[in-house]
Length: 455
Image 1 (cartoon, rainbow, N blue to C red):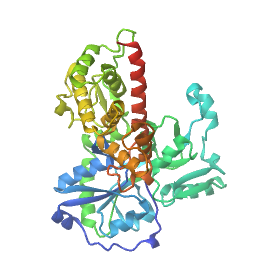
Image 2: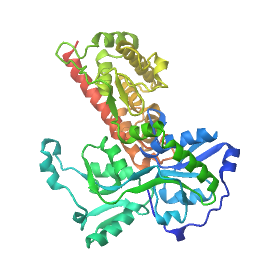
Image 3: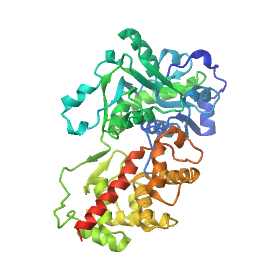
Image 4: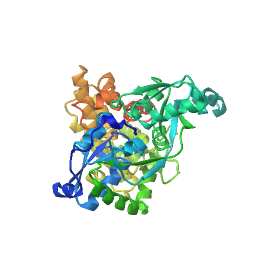
């Protein structure tokens, strides 16, 4: 997110904290946004493009990296200046107004703003030329259209300028800083609002999760994204600039950039089709799934349904977060269950069964057997932390925290909304909730179908 804040709203820095003080306390504190480009949890692992850059920088200068997720983006600069954080990392656009208030690092991304809109209902069954007729294709077509953006963002300022350029009124709905940019993108997808604005790189990431979005209309020239620092932190700025200028020439930087902004959520190193579904076999690995059933106590068809959802039975699958194999183990989790990136399919399947069994044991307080398995599948997909957050929210809002269907799954859906993921009972922040919500439902439906067909 970005914003040209009004300079008169903020005092000059109060905190006299620079690189020597940071090195002395042994900690670099980052004010981050909970988003797919800044900072988030994936299967229990800390991730985010900006997080990965700053983690490497903190390692370079020999300090711990502390992330403080900011609930209200309007408070970013006050928190920076009073010493609650040392660096702003939230997809922060360099603007003239901001440069009067904060120091910017050298830019590490250049991108342009795009309009986020929703494809029409039933677009999947239409020709592209047909559904495109219903969309905006030029900034001129924004006249008298309602667009929701953060009021202190460069999106808001760009829309103000755009009104002058097109000679007509754009109905700009300025949202407060406690509504996240990715939450607005989700609201467009769900039909709650019609239009918002974001950077092209953010749009590309979110289109992987929301297939009904159209983001091809550019609204600006390329703009610079950088880290923000106090005016009094000149030594920190120079150290970070030197490191960034050197690091951006390395292959590691290019790899991290591709991982977040170019790679699909799931990439397969092999295009071979491992799905059989021939009324006799579900996959070529049915015998291995049946062995996993004996060891784990999970129906082999349910383990198969999980594997299909994770990778379409591809033992060579690799996700952008580093999860590998048919059962999509994270690098720090797989070895616990005897599964490594080069393990054969049979070992991957046995390990997946063991992990599902271990997850189910964690949810032993759930009285119903299949409800317990749904909690296990959800934590297998999203990581246990997010599911515990949803469970705590369910209890707080008067729902049954021991039932997944229509109870905990409802609160899980709300973990993409700031109103909920900023709640004091939530400890793992925002997540792309539809993925896990649909995951449990689709695995369950597939399992029920396979039970009727395969013995």
